[in-house]
Image (tube, one colour):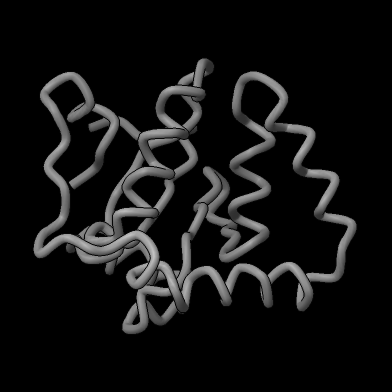
Length: 136
């Protein structure tokens, strides 16, 4: 798969909230900016490790930029929102808030996501139409 020039989103593949967020992003990624992989996949583990990110807790979303830079937690979520269609880029105004405050909210949701939204036993397998958007 050619991922050159694409931003890669690494997410918790068994988390219902995270899978819902990926589906939400896919529907609003009108400019075909993103590709996706779960943090549990071999490529997800490799990409995270190459950036020195510990994925053992699976409590973060990771946005990898084409220039090999990356964002995680609230900054990743807001950087993703900047690329979506509709009014979602306006959410990037929250980037002016201190990172520790944004990440405190992010961590609170991440800590409770399984309790509030549930989790799956396995990573979701994308439909054939969406398979091209996922790297493996």
